[in-house]
Image 1 (tube, rainbow, N blue to C red):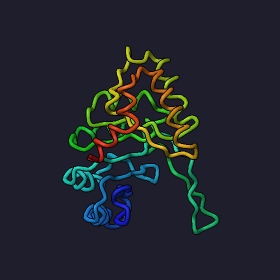
Image 2: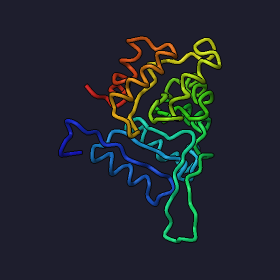
Image 3: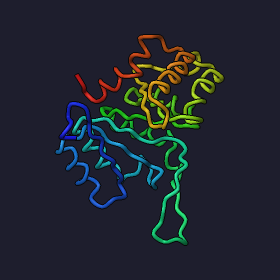
Length: 212
């Protein structure tokens, strides 16, 4: 990151289960990292009391958090061949960000994958909390259902979406130009105009990361 600071922004992974998680967070912030990633399916709820010191430090530093929400399909390798481990999607329900986003209103919380398959809950949390953003990264079912479900439940007439709080990320194996085109078509079906798509595919992220 230091070698290519004109191109790269550091994003530190934070897990309250890890020893000295707060110390790790501070060390990376001091090194210039400007965003945080949390992955609750590793075994913690994002509204767990253990997360509170981390949020307090994140709030003090003024950086955003990208939190995985919704289903995962990841197995975990164990040193013991007899032990079976896997991530647990129960920890990643979007409603676990509802209270936290109100306790820390100055932190931008970005819900990765818009809570797939709990789209409605994710949209509701974002609609109720102005510091919550929706992320449309991923591929396949993680993103294909976004416009279908949204329009099926009534679209903007049912849950208006503020496109100034929607961001795109790659997070898949597709060529980026192809994926941007696919997701651009999806958000157009949801009512995103040309100016909204400029926000989704760059301007919102620039504001979150304080670029420019």
